[in-house]
Length: 378
Ligand SMILES: *Cc1c(COP(=O)(O)O)cnc(C)c1O
Image (cartoon, rainbow, N blue to C red):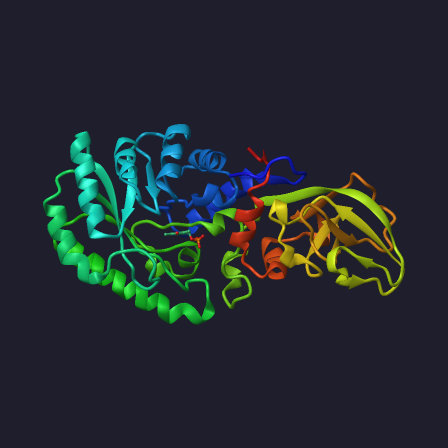
């Protein structure tokens, strides 16, 4: 899914993603980069290629379809691991995963049986990751399923167990440390029982915040996502320092369409939610909620125009938004404006934008990343 025919342009600096990868690898050596959701809006295949050249040999994506695309179009070494975090939904997903050597995350007993059947039909081995719920209450087996899993695996000659996985709910929060420890304790109990039954696998629990904040929870493999794209998971917490070297890889620009005066008492945009308190000058830019630039930014957000900030005035429309350029003679129709990124003191981080938007950097990247992308730093 992409947004076409609009003026927004997403610039992705792949060298920053590689630098972030190297930084994360300096903290934990066996990473499976998470490039689900089109690499958090940065582009599945370009990001996979850049990370492969930097030494990555395993990736986590979302759907089985995304995993198959990566396997077939990513020109990956056949030995590289491609994990589908969402796992199989339809029967065809099992066959597709088996045929394309995708490691499937499975969290229900029925899925184990369907996967064994699909692999047996194809005369191949299925690559399996067991997902356990240790506290997210989303997907996954519980500890009480372990005896039955062990029995099913013993009776399933076509299943090759590779990974045992769980996911942390609070690793990036100061107040979440106890919950992380409780999840880790459950995870260790589960992996302990599976090992005791003679099963061999690579245990993995840590996301970006887990890698940076909990070295004792690195287990065999780690799954960094947001850190690769340059967002510090600890920003605004007591552990902010841990993610300081990360560099934002995405910038988003659009163009100024018009510049005009807004006299004192004049109102702007739908609903007249902004009234000029004095004579002002405004620039109208080509960006709006149809481009994923949230209407929630109305009267709240800022853009970076030639190195300094300009605040949004009035409501964000479908394809147009007004910003305050009072006192600035340097702005002209056709100028480029940064919705994300930009130079100088006006630079806009994903966290800045997320704060005005009422969301997190993850959503900013995923949504704005739907626009047309260009790549640099290769
Ligand atoms: C998205 C995801 C990650 C990566 O999390 P970040 O916070 O972005 O590092 C890791 N593991 C699973 C299962 C995920 O879904």
